[in-house]
Structure formats: structure tokens, C-alpha cells
Length: 80
Image (cartoon, rainbow, N blue to C red; front, side, top):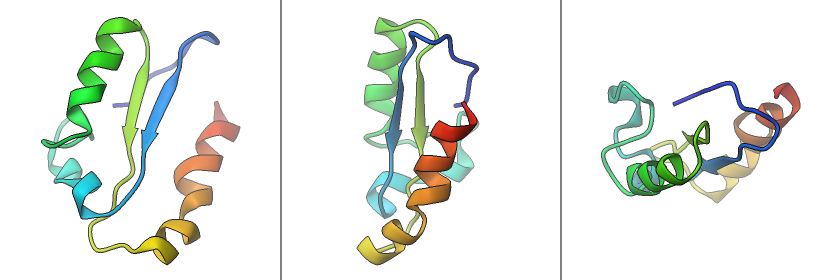
């Protein structure tokens, strides 16, 4: 799920391995059918216009997460 956010809206980013990924590429909203979907529903219900992003990648380890921290996290902040 990606949206244009007003300056007061918040974004929650989940980043991790297969537990976080949980099939996100097959889901229309880009989240998953696992634990990221639950806070996404609550976060969106509490804060209109809020965004939840899932950047989990199945099979990745801590070193992989570190290597993709820029494009998965920092670049998102810079582009908003």
C-alpha cells in the first residue's frame, strides 16, 4: 500500500525476512497475509491517510537487510 501523505500522517515500515515478506508480492496492497497486515489495518483505521509498507524479502539475513536499508528505508524518506 502506498499513498501520498499529508505532513501530519505517519508511515510504518516493516523490513525483514520471510516472516515479514509472507507473500507480499502476491497481495494487491503489497502488504502480506501475515502479521504486517494486522497493524496495517489498525494503523489505517486510527489515522486516516496513514501508510504501512512491507519491505520484507524472503531468504534475507541481517547482512542483506543492511545492504538494502538505503533503498528500502532511507530513500523512501528522502522521496517524500
